[in-house]
Length: 476
Image (cartoon, rainbow, N blue to C red; front, side, top):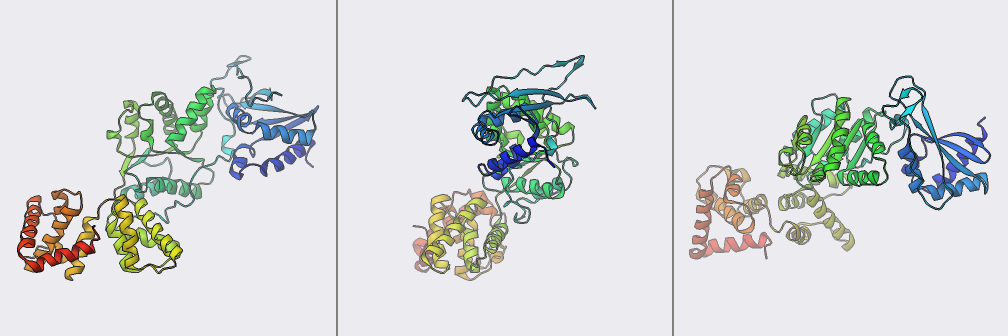
């Protein structure tokens, strides 16, 4: 049978659980251990001074109410904070701090002695038993390897990520730095790595945190004089995932504290996973000693998805949502938006919403009306691939034929028209347009544009072709 102090604390927990989010309850109240109840004073043990301050900062009002409810008007709460020494088999040193009866949510700072008897406490801020604490991983359960579409644009990053997930801290990919532009799947991939690690190694502590949140937490720690607790909290992670590490640029103190956290984790075989919008060599405002450590492991880039990957992304998304789309609509969407995954998904969601709200079937005409508006408002241009597709459909030829070396007049003419519209309707360079036509040089593209201009002025039929194609490309 449980003792009175355990019964009273259990009653308190029932009330607390009904008043805060479940994850917050697991993180901040499940690790608490009731110690004793004497003279209406309930003593509870918390893992660290940082932990105690967080409770006092965020939950003091709730705690005060439940304590008075269960213990009466004279009920009080006392914390027992355990600070372990760095010597093995040592007796924990306990500091007891009663909560204040004032309305303030903060107590006076507690002086933790560095000397106990004849024993020197090398690190009084070690958090004992942290591995038993249910630390929220902050991982997004929707971002898994199963729904991450692999292509040439992200093959290396995905493969490295899976290797890390299979053996965190035990590969040469430590740290693993994934870099690339917005909307290319960096956040999805690092979350997938974290989720896979949790599935394979349930006892490992995995933490995902955005660099902005990390900086704000550090600033709060400085204000509250709890920097050591902040550092040692992060040093106890088995897998630390920090998103958008370039945000540390120019923040010297943040870089310094992260440097020490990084060193501790790396030296102890813990896994570090980072993302950035650029490779380490291009990150400005970062200390050289930290940059050198970012280069220790593997840096893998994620690029804009190629056509086949874009089609696969769309198909996977509509399958997951139980939706069917005509093949021509899928291809139209994939050809129209070639910037990043986020914009593809945004356009698809807009199309599905319009179809649902207006109770209309998703047809190519509806797709053109809705997606063209989306493309013009975001990308401001169609893609070279889409232009080539429209030209091929118009003249009833295969894409491979258009890009081949054949010198048949009708094929050459179609190829030149595609180059002409690519120059007119996109911001691509002549070299890039040529690269989309099996590595033809810029001079070839320039010649094609001049030829099309000349023919449009002298050949009425050819001019009609251009007008028809321009309408199909939906350019106003």
